[in-house]
Amino acid sequence: MGGRLDSASDLVAALQRAADPAETEKIRNRVAADEPIISVRMGMLFEISKRATDLAPAQLEQLFDHPAYEPRLAAFCILDFRARRRLSDSERAELAGTYLDRHDAITTWDMVDRAAPRVLGWPILIEAIDFSLLHDLAASADALRRRSAITAPLWFIRKGSRADVERGLVIADQLSADTHPRVTSAVKIYRKHASKRLA
Image (cartoon, rainbow, N blue to C red; front, top):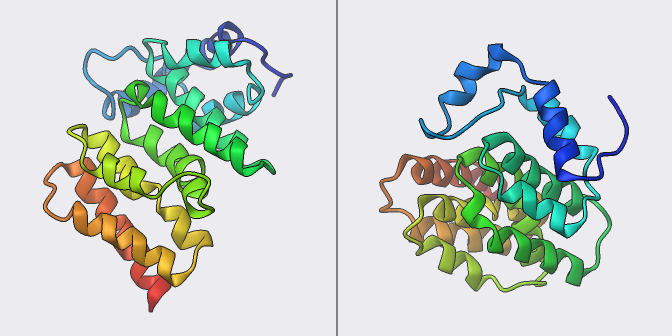
């Protein structure tokens, strides 16, 4: 697949080399009409992102600030790959802080779904950051922040106790009257998995 990518420009160049016009229609269906895209197959984007897991903070910021969809998705993939490592509580809190600080770069549901469970849900589960953040996100005017609020607790279902899963249901209840499709679908997903876990 190739060696390590050490800069944002290297990653973007790798994405551009991997561009596949056959992906354009699928990607265009999930991004804003005016959002630039490179047209990279999702599996290929994950592979490229994994090669850039150790990007310096300034380089990662360049990806968050990129106008195109794929470099920003790659940035959130990098956070997710970092979260899979053996980290201290403070390192997990720092990753979550980056996710929250750069939530403005999230423009599609898949950016949330890729990163929120491990990057945000994991440190909340181990109390490296406060659960109240989920209530704050659930109260946001931004639908994708509200999606983060209910997607992060999917980690509770995977690794938490029954009580943790039930805490996630509190967030689902907070969002029960939400009518945005990106939120309602995520609430349904959480409730479905929670019901299986609690059965």
